Each structure stands twice: as structure tokens, then as C-alpha cells.
Image 1 (cartoon, rainbow, N blue to C red):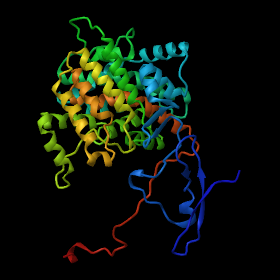
Image 2: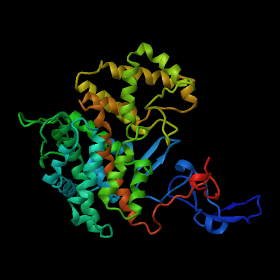
Image 3: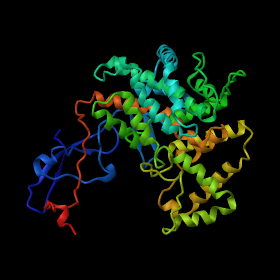
Image 4: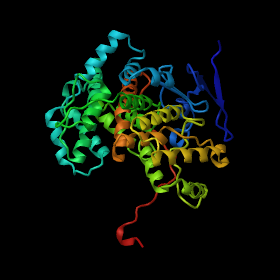
Length: 432
């Protein structure tokens, strides 16, 4: 079969050049433009990578037009309904779902790495009590490399595996410690006998004075949310992890860089912004006025939780988390929760409004996740930290895949320079 080519022609006399067209297993073909600069002395210009594939990957596939999300070929709906988080973590890391023996071994290994070095717990006292949990998380995760020197050789598969287990296991512990420090309560040491999610909720909400009793409905809700957030292709934080990793940085530093990127309100902080927006609207009677402000280009009001950079259809995660939201509120006796009713009314109005329909601004996963977290008693400042717990699995898998990719080079984007050309230096005394 003849090689598929794309031809680029010019109007400035530069000879036309052919580029190979590479087909993925699913999704759009990719034009391999790597020879472009060498042959033409020209770059492409693509701010935000709107049309650029920065790598090849076998982990996650998204079809934004059809509203499809798959991990290793499995639709997210199947995984969220039938698996727990560690089962999905095994799939993302290893490429296949585990058999019963592999699942037990994987779970056991993760749960026996949940403790953090005792000296690490002293880091927290160096932060202000009211420090944002993401600021603390960035610092503490970045510091892990100072405690676990034995797994920093990125060229050794066994070292990478150990680092992966440590990060997946310790992120819930570190995150729960952020919360406990914030509210002035004692840290709760992890319990190996509990499941991954139950252990996290125990470390978050347990206290030394009484026995903690897991609630299966709430456990399932957090399990599902973690699964929905586990990976999402080459988003900003994942690209940050890959960029940091391309320089040979250690895995703990790379994950810390991903956490920093995730913190942005346009990325992981969006569910926090949704809750703030709903509280500012305050009442169903004020939705119309708010929608009017959103449409006004002169007003800078934003409808958070609607629309997505990739999804141009209903975010498949949003449907699943809406169901989870109903289950949690029913379990906690909050079905008439003012905020949830307000969110449902806002969704209904927006989905029926031509302005949003024509722009395909459908609810995304952030629209409901914040409401679930609030119902569970998790403060808004912790929302993005929980996102980081889930996304760490995807970051590690993407980082590990990048390390083994023979085509990978240190990330070094080029630019379209629009500044001054060469200028003569003017001594201070002669400057006007």
C-alpha cells in the first residue's frame, strides 16, 4: 500500500514539500511535520496546540464531537459502573484489566505504601494554617524526592515502578494531611485493611476519639469521581508532566509540576469556580439575569462548568457524575439542597437557550463534582487536591510512556518572534 502523503505548497517560491500522514488506531490522521524546519526554514504556528499532536500515546482516547472517553479502549461508562479506582489504575498503568490475583497483589502493594516518612509530616508546620491545600501539595509532593532516593533512576524500569506505587499510595495520605492541618486536627495514619477510597475518607474525616464507619454509597461516589478524573489525554497538566519529564526530571518533581498546572481555575480549579458561581447567583429567580450577563460581551461573567476545550457534545463524565450527585444527596438527606436545585435549574435553562445550544456549551464534569464534594463536607479549597489524587495515576502512566518512547526529545517549542530586530545600543547618557 502506497504511503499516504500531505503536500504543502508555497506562494513565495519555496518548493512544495511532502509530509507522511500517520494513522492512529482510532481518530484523526496526523501529518508528521518534523522535517518542516530542516527543509524549509519555517515553523508552524499553533498557540495552545489546537491542531498539534505533541506525542503518540496508547493510554486515553477522546472523541469530543461524539462525547467519547476511553481508557485503554474501554468506554468510561463501563469502567465507572463496574470497577473500583485501583482496578482502573492498574488498567491505565499496565494496559490491561487485572485478573483476580493481579488485582489483589496490586491493591496490597498500593495499600502497603500509604505511610509517608515521619519527617515529611513536619513539613506541614512550616506552612500557615490557612495556606491553600494546593500550595501545600505542590511543596510536599516535590519534596518526596528528598526522602525516596532509591527510586529516582528514571532509566530503570523497577525504579519507575516503585515511584509509581509510592505516588499513587501516598497522594491520598498527603492530601488528607493538608486538610487536617488546615482545620487544626491531628493527622490520621492510614489503615492497610481499608480500601483505597475508604482509607482516604478515614484519613480525611476520622478522628482519634471514635471509630470511623465507611458509608458504601459515599465510597462508591468518590471511587467513581476518581475514575472519571484518572486521565484525560494531553491536557494542560499532563502536558506539563511530560514536558518536565522530557528533561529527565525525577518522577516526584514531574508530578509536582502537574499539580501546579492543575491548580489553574481553567483546569482543575473549575469545580471550585462552579460552586462560587452558584453561591453568587444565590437563587433560581436570579438565573435569568445571570444568563443575560454571561451573553453580554461587555460583562465578564462566566458560566463555569459548561463547555469544554475538547468535548463539543455532552461530556460523558458529566452524565455519570450527575447520577452520583443524586445518589449522594439522597443518602445524606439533601435532595432538596438549595445549591443542587439551583444547579439543575441552571442546567435546564442553559440547555434550552439557543445561545448555549448553538455554541455546544454542555455541562462538563466540573459542573456537578463540586456539589458532591460540598455534600460530603469537603471544603472548596480541597476540590482541586482531590482531582490531583485521581489524576496522579494518569500522570504517572503518561510520564512512564514518554520515558519509553524512542521518538521523545526534550520539549522545546519554537516561537513566532514579533519583537524588535537588531538595534544599536545607546549609552545611558545619550538616552532621552
